[in-house]
Length: 434
Ligand code: PLP
Image 1 (cartoon, helix red, strand yellow):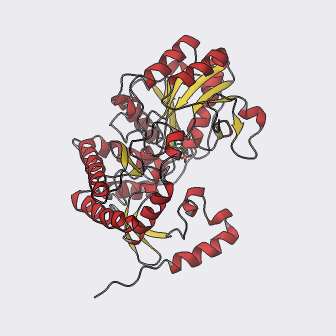
Image 2 (tube, rainbow, N blue to C red; image 1 turned 45 degrees about the vertical axis):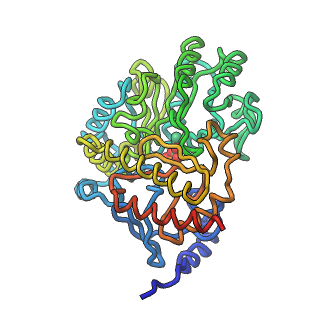
Image 3 (cartoon, rainbow, N blue to C red; image 1 turned 90 degrees about the vertical axis):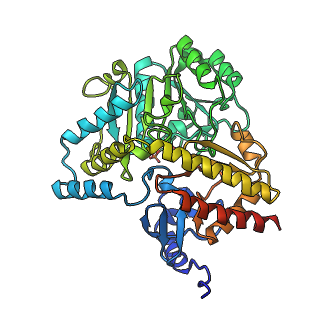
């Protein structure tokens, strides 16, 4: 029996109606499929590595909700923990034992993280860490990198455009010039650009924010010496080094990126995985810094739903499972198998691609070498990538709908699932060849 033709007609109808009531029809821009064209599948269910849409199409999910779903959809133990939490009360606005246990796990596993505060999203985590860095140093400016994303707080919605060293200009209407002027931008993996910023503004810089693996321009690992160089500039100038591990935290290793490197940060931001699929973020670090957060200290930061019992239950269970033997080896296997497989099938069809990867974060680039920074990412063959994306979609493989978004694998992406992805990729590379 031939399968019914691929259709997204039900998703299309919902999307049309949603656009009347929700800006762009979505609650987060990338979901609107602007970069790839067409209609976003509206999803109804997920199980393990698979998701299903309104039209009954089944996909292998390579989006993983942009990072949180390291255990796949609907992990039975996480669901059970959530059910128990729902039955006990969804929110109290009072401290709970679960928050203590969550803080214990995070501080035990993440090197140098002596204290931690839970918030509701990665955006809140980075905004709070920026405020803390400014409060602790008494300095106004932060330095970030072109192509690194730290959530949608005003200070971070700034990039330098093509010039590496210019003072920040707002990336979005609504971010004032005054705010943007306190955000400096350098080029990822380029210490010369960092030095130039420090030479000019060093004594005003409160913190350097960096994604230790750049996951918002695909997956770009830091080059040898880059993070060491940032640490040295911070030490000389008295700025704090902040690792934004909202993506990499508990994903690339059991204790996050710092398990893979000797370069330590002063503050860390977390999100995604630590919420087990519910909305959570966190910021933490050296206790002398964290003790400046209210009510221990004067820097104000609060939240009605912070430390929410449901989110804490899902997060704690997720972290507990991630602490078990062999999990990160399994994720490494999935990542390296997909990386090698994609390179192989692309090569067989005469297509030069490169694959950036750290553990289960992975990004195929339509370029001969893995880009080192945003300029190189934007020089990759985007048009070919879009065609690849759309053939994969019709073959039942749901890629993140932007060449700048990483693929996030889970422990449920086992060999048969990886084979299915690579079979589809084989067809896709053949089809886009013609
Ligand atoms: N920081 C990084 C590195 C991220 O990748 C993201 C989101 O993708 C954020 C911060 C913002 O997190 P959220 O979307 O939970 O606000």
